[in-house]
Image (cartoon, rainbow, N blue to C red; front, top):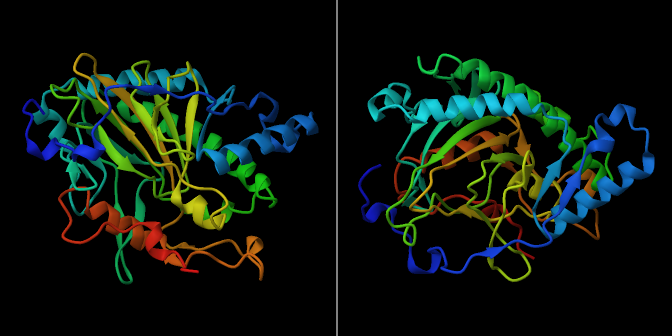
Length: 349
């Protein structure tokens, strides 16, 4: 990633703006009163948190959480191990390179919206191995690829995964309650989850005015729980006016993105947030998103509990495994056809 070429150049309308708008009013939700939904002592406190999350999902598509219960030492361990891994020579990192058969491991040539991202990544699945639909009824198995160095990376990743998995289910329960559903209404979709975690490294970029660390996109899964370092660079498109606003890092907070799957399950009551990552010429940046995804065999459609004659289904059903595989294929090269999005399944009124 030492050369800068045309593959990284964004279209003029998608390039970062010179003036950075720092987000104001982004929901910051304190989860200290809901360490466990089974033992909530303050029912009013729970109601307030559920209402706040519902408002955030509806009006922003993302929010931040503090006092979330996830152990800070787990986060420190994975961040330190991530820095060691990415500091290696490119030849060493490519020993665990992902490919078109197994989408887990290292990559430095990924594209978003057909433009190459200024980043390198290491992906691993929460469940190992995981099964993904390849085509038709054929099922592929993806297995984690662990590097020899640093030796502590695997343990750090697996411990972090279990810690954040608990937070994901807590957030899923709160979102379910905010939709007026039982807390565990969506749990069964994650029995054989296809969730994965990504270690992101954004090196200093010689032309940050032309490129993006990750181009504009919406997350395809249910939820994303993001840990970012102090450098920052995440920008979210504000729903009310379409402006790109930068999310300032909050110490020991997680940024929560509503994904496309939640948008469909909620029948458009909640909307996934479009976002991107800007880079700079002086500092490298690290981040760790946890992509909370259902099982590959789950068919995604509006929940029956939320549709009726006055509020009919707004999306056609689609299979999660098929959707994920199609999207995965576009990460390696410019697609010959339009990238599949949930809008393709929208029922026209």
